[in-house]
Length: 58
Image (tube, rainbow, N blue to C red; front, side, top):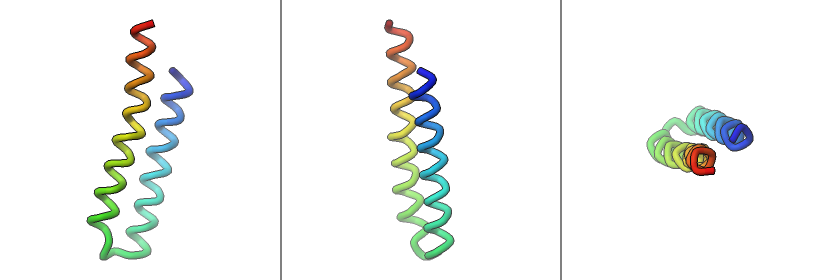
């Protein structure tokens, strides 16, 4: 559980940082970058939710 939670937190931080970097490099692409970043963060957070469900089931 702890490994999945920390991996998800690191992934979300990495995605957010790279999205901010991409927006800084090309402000005109902020909309598509935001969309892809939010989708990536949601998928990374899903890993932590799956781990939480497995922890409660077992």
